[in-house]
Amino acid sequence: MSWGFYASPMMYAQNALVLDEFLDKRWSRDHRRYRYGSEKHFTAQQFSFGCSEYGKKRNGLKENRMQFPEMLVVLLVLDTTALIVVRWCWKENLMMDVLAGRKTGGYTEGNIFISGYPKNQSTFARVSGYCEQNDIHSPNVTVYESLLYSAWLRLSSEVNTKIRKIFVDELMELVELHPLRNAMVGLPGVGGLTIEQRKRLTIAVELVANPSIIFMDEPTSGLDARAAAIVMRTVRNTVDTGRTLLLMKIGGQIIFAGPLGHQSHKLVEYFQDIPGVPKIRKGHNPATWVLDVTSSSAETQLNVDYAQIYANSTLYEDNQELIRELSAPPSGSKDLFFKPSTHNHLSYNARLVCGNNIGHIGRTRNIMSFDSSPPQQLQDLLDLSGGLYAVVLFLGAVNINTVQPIVAVERTVFYRERAAGMYSSLPYALSQVTIESIYIAIQTSIYALILYPTMGFEWIASKFLWFYYFLFMSFISFTLFGMMTVALTPTIQISAILIYFFTCLWNLFSGFVIPRPPPPLSHP
Image (cartoon, rainbow, N blue to C red):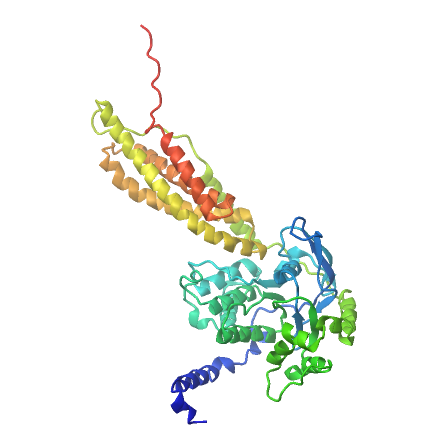
């Protein structure tokens, strides 16, 4: 068909792109060495649950609870690969959230076992990773900094700095992020990483915690064919390291759960044994064939119910037996246990001391003193007071408006990292205060050195320090108030409305626009 190139010269470019992509070394790189090549190993865990229920009142349902597909087992250890094809009629990510322990409301009933022991969320978070459908990262850091930050907070304190960095480098190679090592993450749709690059970064951030079990909620959602292939190659590399992997696709009930076999022959045989299902053609991709024959339109055309067929199959009975076996701990095994992370406690104490030192606010004093004599007229005093009033109000309002978007973006990242067990709310809040205090101290120094001599104040060290202290505490009060409104409101728009109201209120009642009433004249 070489004559077809003359009819469509664009085919030359298309063929070149395809050849360049699939002849690239990353498609043939052997990632199995990472299973044992890393100096930091993990322990393979078996994950099983049965007949779990999640309930929440006033959620729009007639009943206040909903039941997940009855009895499911997920088992993926070393070379044993289990595929779970799920089609669910309600929110498909709810089951993933419940299994990973990420639901903050409602209640959960049922049995979830980790290597035969009941799941304890505090320890389970240390051996599991959760890749959300929406990729949430701090925009103003590089890819390497994101991974190193996660490694510092999630790996054990027994791992020294050198091994930690080696481990991060190996994982960057595993998920093909080395070319993007120094790239800024950025905001989605604005700049920085592309969608599939952010997806790979999400996977890497969880892998750097060295988990045994990884949850992925629709990892290829919203991606084109090439981007999805790159992400799934990353998923394949992750599976080759021997980690248990649970993926969720859009849909409802379970129609298959079991090992794939060599070149997916067990999966193909299972569906080909169903009457009416067309045989797979030679050379056809088994994954594409399964998606075609299990689609809603194909199920309607064949007049079959795959979920019911699976429930009546021997594969379902085998899975039930396997669940019962996994629900009992093996002989000689021990439940998961982790000692408290020492380095996290040290960082928490350091932030706590720093925050407490900054938080002590002393009483202010009058700092006005002049080079010569005090002002002889009321207008001179009003001019000096107006200068201080304008400085504090203007820069304070600027600080409030600039800190709100930053806190709003990082708040979403905080929710994800707190759920992953990286830190709690208190050290995060204290670290925010510490960082803002440093920037405000620099801002106040620059402004005070310019403003103090301009207004003609007396050059005495004690008076200049009181002037600096007054400006610093005023600016930090504005900034912390802006951070507080973002933390207390659901959206940044509501926070901006509150800020506008309070700044107007402070402006009116600051004592300058509407002066305080003078004291009554004393009688002779």
